Image (tube, rainbow, N blue to C red):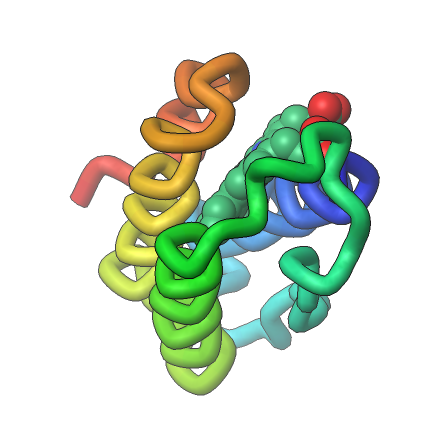
Length: 104
Ligand code: HEC
């Protein structure tokens, strides 16, 4: 699951770079693949609980929105879902994830 997370972080950084640049007005957004990370083996097998799966599902809903309509608002909603799950499961990367947020 950690490898999936690293890929998500990279793709989120690419999307952020796109959204804060001029090309967001005319260009094609960068690829940001759907990542069913909850199906992958986590470092700590106790991580996957019903609560975790609910948070994963909330994340995927926010993610679909930014896919349909890549705006800073929708992007920040995804980042909020990253942080929400990390607060319960994996606080280490929160600082780094928070840096993704776009000032609107
Ligand atoms: C539903 C819960 C959940 C969501 C949503 C989530 N994460 Fe994670 N994340 C985790 C868990 C659990 C781990 C630890 C995975 C492991 O060690 O196998 C993790 C690990 C990570 C790591 C560390 C990987 C490493 O090298 O060990 C990064 C970076 C990360 N997530 C970024 C993100 C970003 C960026 C998002 C949003 C785009 C996100 N996460 C969304 C639960 C979540």
